[in-house]
Structure formats: C-alpha cells, structure tokens
Image (cartoon, rainbow, N blue to C red; front, side):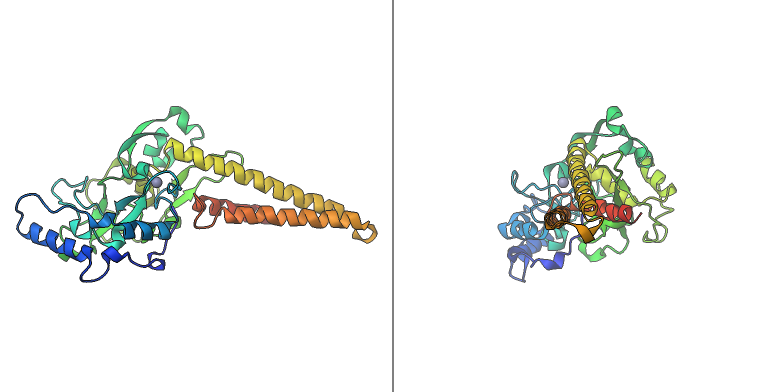
Amino acid sequence: MRAVTRSTAKAPEALSGADSPAAKELQKLTAWFAAPDGSPPAFAVYKADSVKQQLDALFHGKCAYCESFFASTAPVDVEHYRPKGAVSEDASHPGYWWLAMDWDNLLPSCIDCNRKRKQVTPRLSAKLLTLRDDRQGFNQGGLLLSGKKDSFPILGQRAMSAAQGFADEYPLLLDPCRDNPDEHLKFHIDRSNLIGLVLPRPHTGTDLPPGAAAGTAREGNLEEALAAGLSLKGSVSIHVYGLNRLGLVQERTRLLRQLEFLEMLALEVGAMADELLLDPTALPPKVVDAARRLYFLQDQILGQMKRMARPEAPYSAMVRAWIEDFKVRLQA
Ligand SMILES: [Zn+2]
C-alpha cells in the first residue's frame, strides 16, 4: 500500500456541486432514512464513469490496498472505505449510507481485496506476531477468509448518522488517502530469503483515542498485536484485505527476485569498470572507453530499479523499501 494524496485529482463531476447527481442521491436517501417507506433508494452515483476515471487517475489503475495493477484485465471495483449498506461488525448499523457518494470515501479495489473469498494464506498471518519468523509459512498455510466487503472494524464509538461525525471512531483499516501506510506496514526485505510478505510495523499506538487501548473485548490477534507494540491498523488491514494471500505473495516475490537480479548486475558491472580503471595512468583508450560504457550500463540498471518504485508501478511501496535497504547495504 502506498500513500496517495487525494487532492492531486479533481473531484469527479458526478459528485461535485449542489446540483450534482450525488447531491440528489443524498437528498433521497436522507428523506428515506428519516421516514423509511418501501425499499430504500439504490446507491448508483458512486459507479459513475467520472468517478472511475478520477480513481484511475489517482491510483494509476492499481488497487488502493494491494497495489496490484488490474486496469488491463478487469474493470475497477469502486469500493467504499466506510461501507455504504451494512457493517459486518455491527448488525444494527444501517451502513454509512450518507457517504455512499462521498468522494473521500471511495477507493478503487481489486476483486480479491474487496470481496470475501477464501484465500490460501500462511496460517500464521492469523497470528501476526510470529509471521516474521515463519520462513515456510505457506507449507502450513490454510484457507482463510479475507476481503473487505462490509467490514469496518473500529475502536471507540461508531457513528450512526451524518450528524455524529467520526471523532470517536478509530478505524482499524488503513486508507491510503488518510493514513501513511509506511507507519503501519513494512515489507519483509531479506536477500537471503526472498519472500514478498508484508508485516505490521512496531507502533506506539499514541494515535489511539483515549480509552480505546483499554477498550472492551477485542479479537485475539488485536490483543496480541497491542501487547507486542505492533500497529493495530497494520495488523488488522493485513488480515482483512488479505495482503499476504498466496497469489499476491507470489507476485511480490517474483518482483523481489527481479530486484535482486538487477542489484547483482549493477554491482557487478560497477566492479568490472572499477577493475579496468585500477591504474588509469597507463590505460589504452579502448579500455577507458569500455569502463565508461560499463558505468553507463550501471546507471541504466539503477534507473530501471528507480522506475519500478514510481507511483504508477505495481507494488511500488515494496520496491521503495528494497531500494532503501540497498542504500543501507551499500553504505555498510
Ligand atoms: Zn487489491
């Protein structure tokens, strides 16, 4: 997951202005919820073409949660961060219907992050604390239900209406437009053990609302994460979005192998050039030229690694983490 600044894209036409389709839909819904009669009005405006276009521009055709590029093979699933029609964690909640057409609440998602499906996931992702130490997690993996759908786990007090605001809600799911995912998630970068896992980052939890840390009953893995000082948002997001499902881990691992290969090439080519120029005073021009071309090649390889970390590239947050680690290793 990569942080995205929503204000870099214009709000979609269908959602902007007092006369917009969104404003009209909200009016209808407000009237219905004030005096329910018959079936509620349908949610339709969030699916408008202008919404899809702007989400595409903002996220470069990638899933907001897992950074998979899906625009080439599948239509965008416009997903509601706060679910519009129901809340899995609270059967009495009607859903955040007043945000169904709110630009800030809409994200593009791939099918697997959004829909509830059973996924092959390392069993230990249910116990996020030990996942780090589990090298063969998938051997003992099992089918775990993941996918966000109507999930919106929080700590604190859930807002039941637009009037209430969200000051008392502490969402346990990451939103790349509101949170900085880097504060909550980290990638497993280990050249001796290439596996594209994402893990919760240690986190002090100082942004928890007062009283939330000592709140009421929580699921076991939340308690574990809290006790170990790991980010709750990170832990829950990995679990709910299924960020370590088998297909994703395989894709990210393939990318790690490419990065390792490019890094090896860059270092080797640089070392060859250095050797050629060991004593530059007595070198034939051909050798100097060969060294120059090797350095050029090295620049190209490093440039390619950087391009793989650009916002439009899939899994760019992981690539960035690799490059940071590479820099540290170079200095060492
Ligand atoms: Zn996804």
